[in-house]
Length: 396
Image 1 (cartoon, helix red, strand yellow):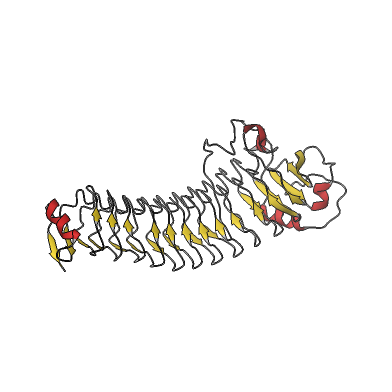
Image 2 (cartoon, rainbow, N blue to C red):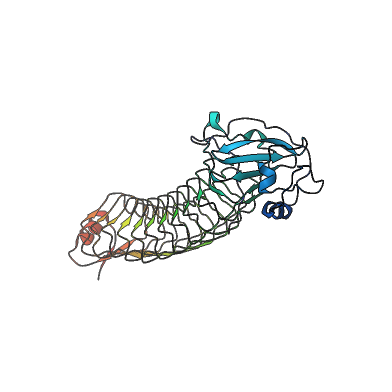
């Protein structure tokens, strides 16, 4: 189950909210629990009248096109067999069957977007199978969403930029958390992803600055680029067995992240995946990993211990740049090159143990590492590099 809250609308390509000021709807916000109960009801109500304390919603009521003025503010179609209705209290109900329509750019906004300042609660009734792209994008005061188990797909950007959204449940059956779905959920504190999900896509939880905990199921095999970038409240993450790749910038700027556990199933980590994780103190990359991108741990200023896998052949550009608390590291056997800026600005780095497999060390690799001693075999390339650069060398 998710607990979700979102951030202000950002100007980007794709699902753009435009600059509409919205229409005003008078009336108080009904209790969310009352909505859920009435949505589950099978009552055959012929007369659709306003309830003074809560809006009564059922499939039959919603399908009835005759809504009493004052209760229904607007309504229409949102898919081949899907309909929507908005009442005076800011309740938006999606009913019918099958997929909702996709929405996107300024000329193709959702039909309820003009009420973006008024919609507070959304109930999707059973029978809907897909939430459309950008369907609920930019609903400024949306606080609660109910999604039935019939939904198996949530489109891209669906809940992006809903700054007051506080809770949502992702139903079992959903297989992917798509691009930008929960982008900017700044009050989101806890996420449980169902075991049906196999991938978390690009920027799915980007800038969820209040997120402190997330449970990723074993069913997930990939974490996309920027999936959790700028989740500043996230303190610990365990990547489950089964995940084979972590995309670039996936956990970038997660400034509260202290602990990361990586699985033996992992084979690749994209560039800058953990850049700017300033609270991270230790990282162990399993031997299953054969590819680590550039600047992966750049700016992890509290990192004191890093264990690298034996399967890599290169320390990529900027890998530990400005890791100012890193004091020592062992370069794995099999590494042949250490690229520019790999340890740039590691001002407390005192010891690097190098294998004799290393044959290339770039000019700017150890810039500003003024207290460094290189350890290696006598007669190795590491020794010749140290002598050339005036770096102390200790033969192992």
